[in-house]
Image (cartoon, rainbow, N blue to C red; front, side):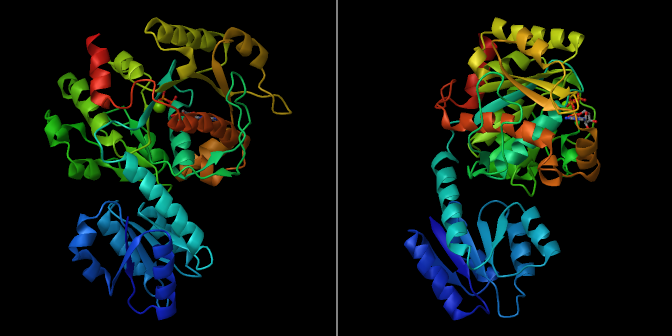
Length: 422
Ligand SMILES: Nc1ncnc2c1ncn2[C@@H]1O[C@H](COP(=O)(O)OP(=O)(O)OP(=O)(O)O)[C@@H](O)[C@H]1O
Ligand SMILES: [Mg+2]
């Protein structure tokens, strides 16, 4: 893997340290005086997912250039700024680029080792047309039960490279099993809001929606890397968001072939693609579900809501989705004074064959996160509701290690269209 060091004004000992470190990791380090030189180096331009190391200058003044570079370069390179201190606002701006991180000198060996591991894992899988991403569809059995929040927070948790250790994944073991501690996954995660007329997902984390299906213009061949880049909204957690701006679309403008071609085009870039389906559904929902590696069906816990959830789950059986691929999520759940879900015994009894996850109701924590346009995982990571969501996220994250149910060698579009024909 290619590695570039941009060294202007840096301490020569620091540069020598980074060179040694990169060589020890089997990288192929090249030195450049400044970002302009780097940008003009054909080896940099032509390399696959290079790492760029920026040691701080004597006056600590290189962070602004680093941010500007990461914004310009998009996701081509991953940039690591190494300095013992950084101002909080600049750190936020650096993270917001979605393509850079900061580390101290003492943490640099560990961070660089992890970054190189993540990049090579992605390179091994990414860029191929093999449809390597696992597709997980979040399908509501009714509206307003927190599906979008759940899909988004699952994505945020997994994209920030953590999977809790020791979480239960058996039926009914979801509640509160996750912890904050965990191992890094290095997962590349995207979330797609299938409300193509403009859903709420992008607003929940304050990113500008950029996925406009009309830009594909009925011609899947237009879906090149550049167009996908243009339609990607990058969140600071490393989650990529595909969400549409609000506008009216005629029925002819939502062609499933185009949507499937789009999923195919992005699937080579990610390990996991999460799909938030709107509660009013899409006509080709069955194709989407059958082509997915797992389905998270959401519903409520009241008697009528549970009936709807049961009916939705039965429908999955009718279209031959095996129960092992399904998680039933019940939320937002009311609890008693010690935090137990009030109707849990009845719900457990009603859905014995499904893996169940319960998400507690926490109007204050979820409402505050949504109002601030920030992830719950960042604003209230220790809350019970965040723990509940992490339990589900760990199950979803675990799917990336499993062999694909629908063969991963088959491109996503073919998987989906084959189902559409059958
Ligand atoms: N665990 C929770 N506790 C309390 N409130 C919640 C919880 N999850 C979601 N909400 C609130 O419920 C409302 C709907 O959330 P969200 O948009 O995620 O649901 P949805 O099922 O995707 O809705 P829609 O059917 O409109 O797509 C929001 O106001 C959100 O703040
Ligand atoms: Mg929704």
